[in-house]
Image 1 (cartoon, rainbow, N blue to C red):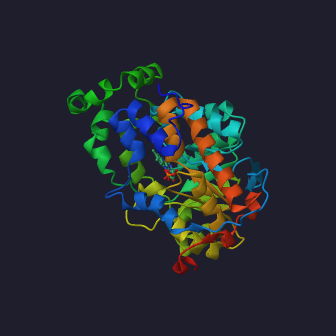
Image 2: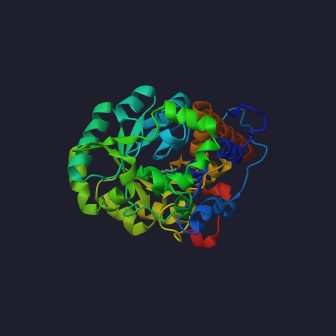
Image 3: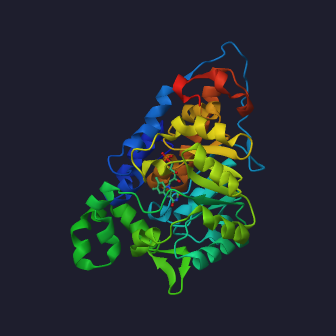
Length: 390
Ligand SMILES: Cc1cc2nc3c(=O)[nH]c(=O)nc-3n(C[C@H](O)[C@H](O)[C@H](O)COP(=O)(O)O)c2cc1C
């Protein structure tokens, strides 16, 4: 396994390279890829270049305080770990491992409905808060029991993802035979199996962890949902604004709506009782051609005012990206691939490394900007294109 404390692992791109070396192509591309031409995925990251920093020089900032509050919880970092489905495929007990690293760092881990570890085990693995991300897979009854399990496990917010009425067209997954590999049909699987043999260490760890798993947080009448059924299940599990009534009744705690792109949807989410919004396009994995998230953040902030907390995700690979998003106005950000690469490269040590890289980058950027606390980060510290100020 790659030593992630190695001096050659300097940034998130190095962790990505390390993940590429350890994971079979089908797993690496599942993390790394996006929808269709992957334009939105690339733009999410590139758009940070459109925001320029305006430092206040010669300001003494001997220590920098990264603490912030999200939905009433004080975090040691202004970033959270985003829901990343099937993390257990990247590393044994992947969701527990990532949650533990988040808790040690003083931040929140968000568990996907489509995870390989049960919510109870994930919550028990960390001393930090856990949010539960909801898909309505299996219908209302199955989702309600999932919500109950999340509540009983002690999750502190429910994240309802609203941008997934169907799975996006991930061309890399088609080429790598994802569907065939989870079909369980030997003849269909055969042409794609060699990518696993090229990664024997990953394969051994994966098999030790139980091999192809089901989804323990989606319990159908027949038992936990098998891997093979994900695509079809997502199409039958669309969430609509009308669903929020029963979701609110079942959950009775703070609701975060994830996947907001526009002022209209921000207002709808607030009308449905959202305590926080995540400006997100699912990391460019759903509708290709939507604007990068940082670009639409000002519009959503203007529509939301103080009615809900606004978070953003997409394309964050450096501490300075986090700082820019906070300067534009996000309360905090979520990171997806940045930690998923770490998990794929080296399990918990890789997630810790990803968090350390981002934390150090935020601290350094804030010192260079002349800011001692996250509260000081505002638009006076950035130059952004005039047409963004909506
Ligand atoms: C491999 C992978 C799996 C994901 N699975 C989910 C999921 O199950 N539910 C969800 O709401 N978002 C999911 N996302 C989207 C992330 O929560 C987040 O919005 C996105 O990764 C942010 O972009 P970034 O990866 O550029 O940081 C997934 C993202 C990745 C990369």
